[in-house]
Length: 546
Image 1 (cartoon, rainbow, N blue to C red):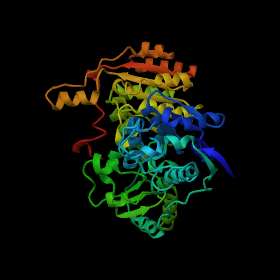
Image 2: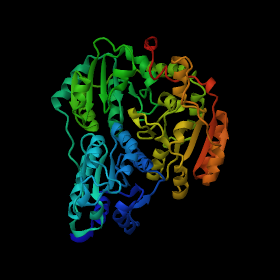
Image 3: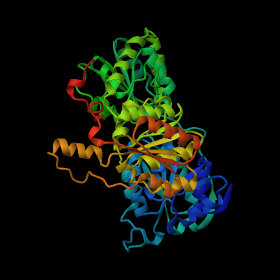
Image 4: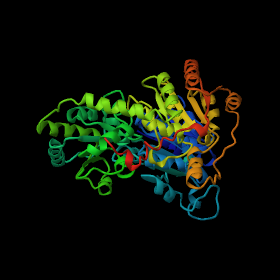
């Protein structure tokens, strides 16, 4: 039905038709028309307003990573978009569907170079350089089709951030608008049956196949476990693929336990993964290794150069591969004892990465099995890639290869906003946490009950270690002067705790989760006693052994 609507109303009603229930945003003069429309729809769509524009995008990122549905945020044009840029890059790198809705200078000033408020030389070009797709809406009647296309872009092919900009004057302009809802489903690329049959024939003769999974396989967990059990192949994630097969399943490996199987691997099946472990982190690729690569993005194939390239949706392709393997001979005998022994040996070996493994164990004991763990760029975060057991898809939230310092706490707020009934635990180092410390106010103001653990070693730990070990102790820019984190938490109106042992952390976590309120726990760490986790993340050649 056609109705007279403002540009802002046309966008908001289109978002509602596409199932959006939350927008993370900070209003500004260019987007007043959008936020007025959001106010009018406040009974159907909530607005969470952080204290920094980067946090709006990270919260949308956390919402999307933990649900698989698009996260939506809004910032002002120019500096607002640029402030959100780090989070947009994180979403791009982690293949996450995030929609940015921003403003633009008035229509008459676009491209004029007159210096209108927040003008960029080419904002749309800037957005397109770090997004999958971006467009301008020049008239209210264009909004429904533009929003629909944004959601199509996020829902087909490789999911990545997209953007819409609307000139300042168009947000408030009125015109007849016909809304356009989403289709019942989006068509996905289907895998070539001949390629699946070729892969099955290759696997028939494989003695030690391995499956490597990434974020693009999160929605295919059931099919991947079935395929792994059929082939008796360990399933190895690095970051974003964690939880696809639970760590307490004998086929659920980590990057550390997977390394033990690597020298014997003869066929590697990549599903929704860049295969970073294979081409970058693990040494000595096995001789005559064959690679089967399943990915929705055709551009990955010339990058990986697999033996059998399979372009298609991870779930549908994995199902097709299961059927093809069954035609070639069916299930193999269980290797449970062999794989369980390899995992047990790895668990024993990683115990030397202290105190991080002990703190991770304490957190795992308290966090419910279906709770969310949001990592961060810090020593405990790095250790969590192999030292924190994960039991369900999407419950380990990472920003992937961008490795964006400071993403963690803001992202965790988006995770909790999407899952208010689930426990959400955020970990950070003292350096990264201070990038988004102002969002403690957002947690309290909006009742977002994240429990945050800040590991305080008084340094950018990796930087300081490298400067000490590789640059003759020339430490510069790595030592940090921190606030009293407990008093800081109290000043924002949330509970604050300080501990220095895993047992103390466990007790405080139990108390914090029981209170069901925002909380901050500072863990004092002596950095001179920290054991580096990098032996298991970038192992030297000598580590590549059975």
